[in-house]
Image (cartoon, rainbow, N blue to C red; front, top):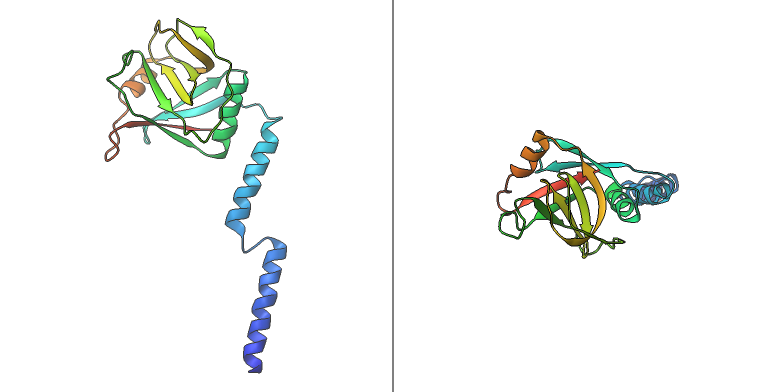
Length: 180
């Protein structure tokens, strides 16, 4: 009986020591600490670009961000978790030959100050309510209420990556990955 009590006391003391030193809840506390640091630091930190891949295995391209609240909020959110955004309609909607749109989950509230835009250059990226990112991968004249969030340096490699983004097996759609 004394042996069992000794082991129980040792286990109890070890548990207390781990709690006081931060061990024992490493995964959840690390995630909370990272989220706190990111949200605290992003108020003073300026993020001027994000990395985007067309498909999971695609080449990475730099999305240069605008200096506005919409782009800053997107960068802040992407700083906490990589986005994998689907393209549900990629070749059967109006203007599909010059643009693609990616739906952001509705749990995110993204501020915007849309303006009426009627001419877009290849590589420009806009935000549109509700929670949609629109990429113009060719020059276009599409009228809409958009907030510009950034642009890609346009090149043949960029155009090929967008146009050849593979349909994910089992999903039936294409995807882009956005990270910091």
